[in-house]
Structure formats: C-alpha cells, structure tokens
Image 1 (spheres, rainbow, N blue to C red):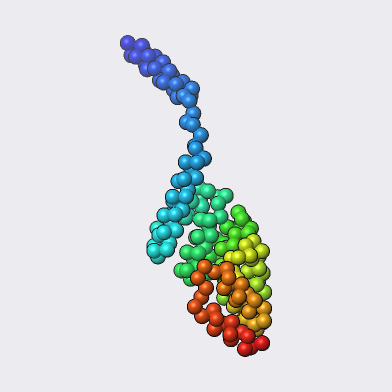
Image 2: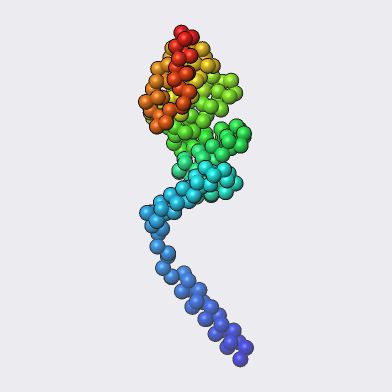
Length: 189
C-alpha cells in the first residue's frame, strides 16, 4: 500500500511539474507602461530632491540607475545630490557615469566644469563648459559659468561680456546682478 501511495505521489508530482514546464511564459513587459513607470518614478525623485529630501531622492535614483543603466538622467541626478552634499568625488563619479551613457549630457558636463573650477583646474573647466555649449548652445548655466570662468578666474573680461549678454537672452530669468557684472567687465577692459 505504501508503495502504491508513493508511486501515485510521484506520478502526481511529475504531472504537476510537467505543467510548470509547459506553462505559457508571461507576456513581455509593455514598453509604454515601463516608460510611464520610469517617468513617474523619476518625477517623484526630482520632486523629493527639490524639497531637500536627498535620502528619498537618492534611493529612487539609485534604483532607477540599476533598472535603467541606459538612462543618464538618474545618474546625473545622483551626481547633483552628491555635489550638493559636498561630495565632489562622488559627484564626479556619477557625472562621468552619466557621460558614459550620454557623452553630451549638458548638466553632467556643466557640473564637471564647476567641480574642475573649484579644484583650480581652469583649463579643464573651460573644456567642460564648452562641451556643454557645443551640445546645447542655449544652456544658460554653462553660458554663465563660462562667463564667470573667463571673467573672474582667467582675467578675460572681453570674452566674458559676450557670454554675459548671451546668457541674458538665453536665461528665462537672468540673474538680477547681471547688469552689474557686464558693467564691471566693461570697466576692466
């Protein structure tokens, strides 16, 4: 009797397992649904970052960076968080990872320029700012940072004036002291 029960159990188990093998595979994920999830998660993380909740934003961006290694945005935002927290090395690493995915990522290039400028590497900073402007000639933060670099750090106010004026037309809300900077630069020529 025991042998019959054991054989019956084995037969039942083999039938059940064979059903698992032949069960249909789950449908492929819907690319539009996946994109929608990505966009919602990204927006929530950006919102958290703007509210100063870097821990929550970092957690979401890290998950997005793992799940979507072909997207530079989460990596760039992780760089921005690290930069704001004073971790220049961590920021630089994230910005370089973003650039590995998208070599023309303007935010990453601009921030790498700021990091280089803060480290006293002015030629490298200029290369980063110019690369950002080559990718997007109207990217206002890079225009202004290059103007500051040329004017204040490299002592070239003549070239900076053109950039200050370009920034004035590119920025949605130019800096309130912009006219003063242009005036000062013109006086130093």
